[in-house]
Length: 378
Image (cartoon, rainbow, N blue to C red):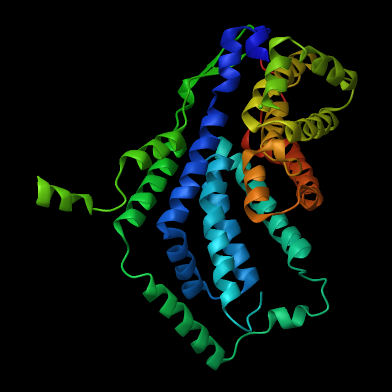
């Protein structure tokens, strides 16, 4: 409809329809299909079970740790796309086994990341696995006897042996996924161009996952073809429109209602406001829309922009309720058959933890990393 009416102008429409979020989501979905088709996720899942055992809580902690490390260097969509097939394969193998229990900025965010992961681990195990609340919790914690451990080990070894030697297809998929992760982690921030007058953020198109997906199409899955030679020689549109029509100025006016509050209280209002808004659009689009507003608010209230924008940036990265917030949520809901209402309820605990941890990072920890963060720069 926007294209037909040309209401926003063609450059804006092109940016909305073909942007990094769309390309990244499309590329990751292709990567997921390639991972499942090559069966490399089953090989990884069996190795995890052979090395770390079959405890649900232990495997849950392992998956949390791996996802945390990946998400520090890759986009949420990329991390989710890599982990979903592996997690599904791990759960599939568990079901077959009988009688088993089911620079400165990096340093600034590290405590919050660790605390957030601990809170997520405890909350999701409490909500989904019944940790510390089910009556038969002791049975979940019961360890296997030596005979059961030997039996389970034999089963897993037999299944892993049945997979045979690692195939060329598995090596190709694994290599391309690793290449995508490396490219994602090395994207230069020099691609960002900030207009100092309008505080508008522009960036060049970069989506390593779509490159990986393109490589899958042109790379053979086996070397059998050589024998022939031998024989024969969106919601995002709303935020984009808000920025284009300058409706975001109303956000600044709303936040200025709290300008007389102390800086920590204003930081809490900003974090809460960003937490609500980030549930309705992708991280990058919401950040592009809101961060200039937070910068203007910092200038008008004479508060160091770093003080408010750090909390806003961290909070925008942590949506936990609605599917439009992150493509990964929609992928998980469709892939695992989880009702959206259940995901919304499960996000209550992480959201509360995110607000408190980001408030601590902004008001306490940032002063240790940047002692002059309370001082308004000249």
